[in-house]
Amino acid sequence: MSKKSIQISVYFLKATLLIGIGAIMLLTILWIFIEYTDFTVQIEREREAYISEKKAWLKNIVESTAAYIHVEYVQSGAITRSEVQSRVQEATGIAAHLLDHFGTQTEREQLEALIREALRPIRFFSGRGYFFAINIDGTEELYADKPELEGLNLSYMIDDQGRQVVPEMLELARNQQEGFYEYNWTKPGSDRNNHPKIAYLKLIPGLDWVIGAGEYLEDVERDQQQKTLTYLSTLTIEENGYIFGGTMDGISLLGPMVGQNMLETRDVNGVYIVKELIRLASAGGGFMEYVVPPFPDVQALPKLSYVSSIPEWSWYIGYGVYIDEISTQIAQLREELNRQILTRVLYILLLTAILVVGIMLTGKSLQKHFKADYTVFMNYFAQAAFEGLSINISSLKMEEYRGIATPLNAMVEKKNQLDSDLKLSLEEQSALLREVHHRVKNNFQTVASLLTMQSYQCEEIAARQALQTAHDRIYSMAAVHNLFYQSDTFSHINIRDFIAEITANVQNSQIRSSCDISMETDIEPFDITLERAIPLGLILNELITNSYKHAFTDRTTGKISIVIHTENGNCQCLFQDNGSGKAEENSSAEAAQGLGLELIRVLTTQLQGHIRCKTANGYRCNLSFPL
Image 1 (cartoon, rainbow, N blue to C red):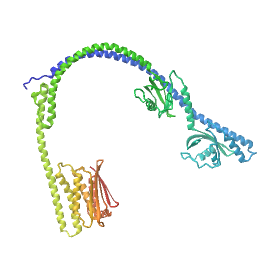
Image 2 (tube, rainbow, N blue to C red):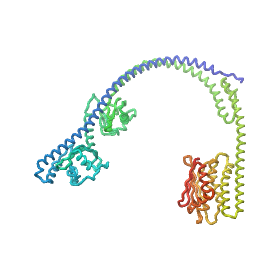
Image 3 (cartoon, one colour):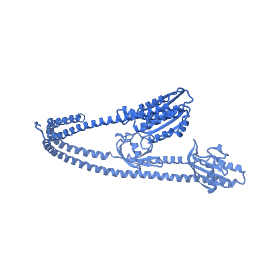
Image 4 (cartoon, helix red, strand yellow):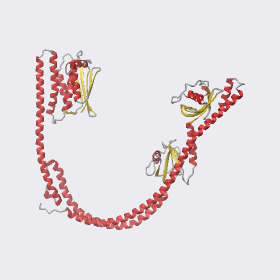
């Protein structure tokens, strides 16, 4: 305590003076920063106004285009239905005309052939459409696509959804005379029958034919898509502007690189452009800024685009504008501002350098003293927790540290006293617990010995066996306390050692000269508590004893196996023998007379587990309980 101490407050005062000087410089810098920030805010507002105007314009273009596509899509369905109906009206008109003029002059078969051949060559819808005719009894009269089916009754044919197409068509014609019918059917050039189709049917009463024609909806949609793409690809909104779009899986349909998968296309900043456009379109539409990749005949410049989805066709479409013009203007203004600020910054840096030198000199001295006392404290804390040492107060220079060291030393002294008392208490408790387990073990062994001695006095085999069984049960409980007595801890024992002692005891007490029984165990070495060990040991004692007594009565050799492991916080125990399978029957009889399976069930309930036993190539039991 004779050494002169140094107060932290003194150093704090010096530091405050330096900070004050520095604050003046910082305020100057802050003034320049505010000026620069105001300029930036102003420029940003102008940019936001420019972008907002462009966004509204882009959104209007894209949404108008999407609305156009939707209208065309809706109208294409109505137009298709109208065209199919018109074709059928044309065909039925031809059939009615031939029927009126030749119906009384020509044989029925010749008249039908005349109508059939008049309609057969007619094609429409780019060659995809044709006429068909079905007799009211279901016979195919005209099948221009597959003439080999004519004359056959096709009522049995169904589409991919299990619908009986021909009977349903005839039912519609009988009830309504004419009308539309939608179904899935075969298609020229395809071996599948799942092509969606819409047909118009009309009944010719005098002929008993139903004449119809249809169009494949997927072809209508494809034609409409191609028509839309052709229109949009020629649409010019402004110079260098174009509608772009593609499928939701990344195939480009409009714009650059048509027909290619663009999912992996990235701009100079590493942004996956098409993936992000698809994400925005799927979410209902949105804006995106990016740099256009160097596509052929396309400028690689910053661009702002709006994108929306065409859910009817799983497309996305968009339109964009280059935004490099405003970026160039902003860059020029920012460069001019930087030149103005740079001159002021040079002056500030000179003054700051002077301040830094002063702060470093003062701080170095302060750091030296702090570091010395800090080292003393760190060495103290590193050893005090384990060695109970006190800090040397005279080695500290700073008065504040000395004030901290005094109560710390008092705390260490108190801790050392408590540690000593706790250690003595733990030693006494350990000795007491060890003695308890030792006496319980001795008492169990005494009872087991008495039962063994009593069994020697019994002439009846059943009584002797009952006493031996009781001896084994008590010995299994004694084994637990014996292991706890030998263990360094009193909360758990190793299950492998415990099972080994139980099996050895049963083997020694159940020696049979007529049968050689081997015992195989596969025990995972984990710890188990006293509350779990005793019921488990009694259960295994019952199962092993039962197998020895009943499973191998007609055998010369036998095997008992025990497998124990943990799974998801549970103990899984598998017991099985390869005996005659009579162990279960005999154990049931024993349960009716004494303990037997009832003891096993009670012990399983005590373990909060469950057990399943069955006879299959021997006797097998599965026991599971939480650890």
